[in-house]
Image 1 (cartoon, helix red, strand yellow):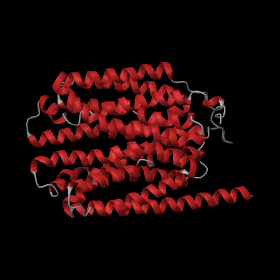
Image 2 (cartoon, rainbow, N blue to C red; image 1 turned 60 degrees about the horizontal axis):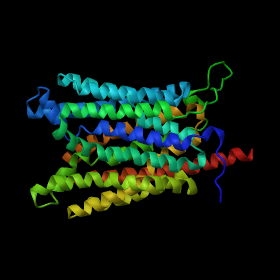
Image 3 (cartoon, rainbow, N blue to C red; image 1 turned 120 degrees about the vertical axis):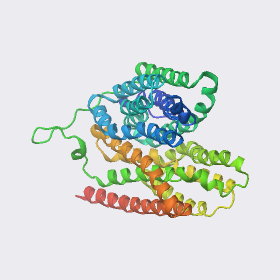
Image 4 (tube, rainbow, N blue to C red; image 1 turned 90 degrees about the vertical axis):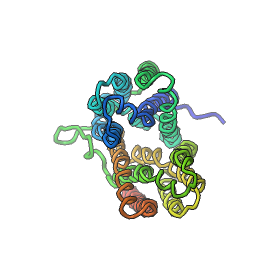
Length: 413
């Protein structure tokens, strides 16, 4: 059977997808590769006290995500107005310059400031999701966004591995220069290979102002549900980060195996998500994106319960891998639901808000997990996250029914 001829506005979607996957992978690797050696770099920049090294390392790492969360809606709005490709060119060139400058930092204040700058100038991965979501045929959106999510999560997995291997070979500063050069290649590919079709101009309201932003979304319930779900996904992923090593230490008798097992636990969920994202996205194109979201949240809630009662490290690795398999379908489905429920002229703006919500979960997750784990107990982190995931599944189920009934009422009028 021959494939249908693609719509003119979707003629280049496969090439765009390939370039966006490469660019997102390289920028995420660059953002995360400093994890293994960040405390060493902070010490190299003149901080000697152990507690201060830990605090400055946390501030430097979180700075990028903090500033990225603040500007994501702005970049999304500018993408709607001036095009998605210019925003990707800006993000890749800005990240390439920022990474090279981080390698030239003279003190720890400059390091934190440049990490903030990287977040302000970046946003390639989230911008890629916007471009792929709006330039891909609607019946292939789930699969395409799932493939994009796999590339992003692969970057999160590979980044720390590269960061552990390169500095001993070429030095810490040269590692940043290498990362900047890799992103510059992504900039060239973006500038010369991506083809973005022209979009329709924004509608004009009766008072003469463009119909943009939240005002352009007729039914805001699906959008609000997706913002909440994106925040919940990252919160669930990150809530156990502060307690993993301590929790694994209670399960592994040999102290020398604790860090290795903790690393396996951290990687297991990311590996599961990489393997499942495109498959769940393809399934969502067939059975409905919202159905997959509800199912993924429910399965994740169930898998969190036994994680609180494991008796061996390998059990936690297996359960985190299975949880990664179930969570892998959420990011592409969230973007797809937003794509199908907002006008295309504001899709970038709304997906920007979604990115900000996810960064909020990424920041709040470790804070909440660390507080609950320290004051109530480590098992409470898993069980509390389970309750949140189950509540998210229930809310999405109700929101889906409400949206369906609203659509049915509208079609009978």
